[in-house]
Structure formats: C-alpha cells, structure tokens
Length: 128
Image (cartoon, helix red, strand yellow):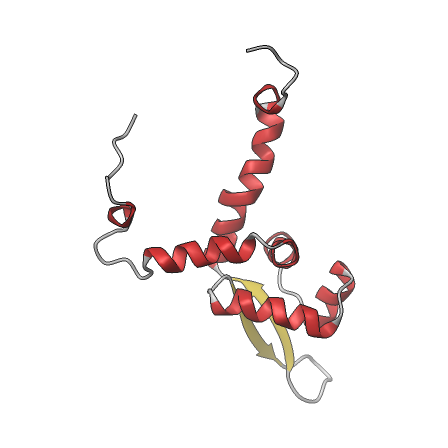
C-alpha cells in the first residue's frame, strides 16, 4: 500500500491550480441532493438549458438558479451562451467542467457503483 503524507495538503502537486479548501468545497457542493442531480444530468446527459434542467429535476426557476450558482462558484459547472439557428438573441446553457465530471464519476457515482460490486460489505445481515 502506498504511503500517504502526514499532512493532507501534501497530496496536492507542487503547482496545483486549486488549494485543498477549493477541492473540499467542490465535494461539499455536490453533497446536496439538488446539486448532485444537476451535476449528474450535466455529466451524463450533456449540456442543458435552465428550462431543460427545470423539467428534468422538476424544480422551480429560483431554486434551480440558486443551486446552479453554487456549482458555478466552486467550478463544477460553467455557463455558456450561443445563438441557435433562427433564434434572436443568445441561448444560455450549462455544462459540467472537468472538475465536475471527475468529482461526480470518481466520487458519489463510484461509491454507489461500489455497492453493486461489494454488496456483502454493505449487508449488515452477513456474519463477519
């Protein structure tokens, strides 16, 4: 087994673009059910508009934007704008960043998948 540093800050590469607190804020943000669902849909379903997210999650506009802003603040999602063919003005959509994708797929999703692979570890009725 690989030896771990005594100070968790030492896990970061020498020229890390984020500090430990920023990584922890990402994990804390995705720990809320609504933010997890937003990020899940963006990672597994691709770019989505606020209207599409509202319909998918069945959430009102103000609540959605509150949670989107939290995800934006910590760098898990990004907001983009583009024009659609035949449309006047800009179309706003959101997408997961690389940090968002990794935080989701290597974090909570991985824990959930682990239950399928190691069901006995989670089964309290099994004698150990």
